[in-house]
Image (cartoon, rainbow, N blue to C red; front, side, top):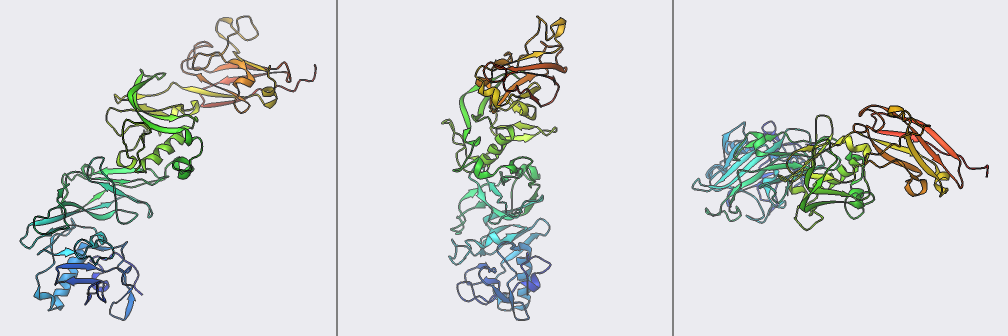
Amino acid sequence: MATPQLIDLSNYSTLLVQSTQSRAGSPDGNFFFDVANGRVEIITAEELAQVDLGSGLEANPLTQDLGIKMEACYAFERQERRVDEELRKYDPFFDGVFKFGGAYNAINGRKFDDASGSGTSLTGDDRAKLRGSGWRELAADGSIDRIYYGAFSLSPILALSQPYYQLSNGGAPVDFNKDGPIDEAIQVFGTTANGDAGAGNFDTRTFLSLKVRTYGQNYDEKQLADSGVTEMGGYATGFAIGETPHLTSGAFALADVYGGAQISPWTGMTLEQLAAPQVESGFNEADGNFTWVLNNDNNGSLYEAVAFLDALAQTDDDIDSGAISVTNGKRVGTWYAYDAQGRIVTNSPFSSQGLFIENVPTADEQLVVFTDDAGGTKTRPFQVSIQVTVGPNAVADTNAWYHAFYLDGPGGSDFNTVNALTIQDSTATEVKGNVATDQVSNRIDFAFDYDGDTIGGPAGTDKDGVFQCEGDGGVTAAKTVFTISRTTTIAVSCVPGVETNV
């Protein structure tokens, strides 16, 4: 039994069979030269399950997905004209331009069967079955009716991924006919002037964007210039477009991130273009202006924000939650990239429009670089996320308080002295207060500016702290000594016991 195969120069002579009838009748082969109407029919297994390959009926090896190379069409016609004197009575259908660029011509006004031409193609257009080639379709007088440019991918693409292309910057996306690795031709020129009514009238030979965006994979885009080709013609070119597993987005289900079944924190995320840039500060560098903002009302993590940006980039919906623009997600570029250190670098797909992510948790701030409207990159000072567990009993004591001091302050301002210094968080607010009021999930959390703090000693050095938690209505006193080091997150436990003495 013949197995499905890509039909090319290596196997066309044994796997292609000339049909004696068109698909409108009772085809008995997988390739039909419609000499009466000047059309070629490529009849795949989806239409004709079995053909006689010389030893009785076998499974038709020509399939819609795997397809046939234009080189096989050309070579098969040469073979059939050698043995079929009836076919010789008509002008040829094909000629070759050059082999290795996959360049061929359909000549003498010949066309491939399509719905607009004959109405008999069950798959809309037999051209979608052609692989590895570009070609021109010439009128009887030799003038050009259509040009198809062959594009194929050189890097891995998942079998079920749906790549697509655009013929103008920001233009409507068009899915390739088959999933997986790219190997199809795109019509880039058409004219009806010579009588080809279905050719259209356009010329888009100077811009091409190929994209593949499968959620959970790293998105990729390659444009015409990346291939070294300046204008598309009737030949084929390879593109180094591919995808690899995303380091973080795959941990979140797309349905949870974007769409009708969103869950927190993504229910609090929106992407918005602002009417006027907003100024952001607190960077190692100067303040920056940002036209785009990812609102993060539920305090999602950086990676949850990245998953949201990935989800927006694979939809053709308007992703601007504001009224300033209509921005269709898959038509524009992506919203971030990775730098050499593996950090997320925000990057709006629009020139001179930066992207800022709101409410990035302290623990994630060293993992992100913001790009502002001027193209400048902004980083945060190293801030330590200090998370102090105080326990449910302290929370239940409405009189319980907490207070953090430096253990060994500069100039004799040590704890247990009159000069003891209160630790300040990254916003210059003293770390002290009421437990019940300030706790979240039985914890007191605060950010510490490791590189900027000079209250407890030289900036950028480790410092010892004292955290006290004490009650007056349910719990007793607790004290914990801890070290603040250049660590993203420091977990501290200061849980006072239940008061049993009063």
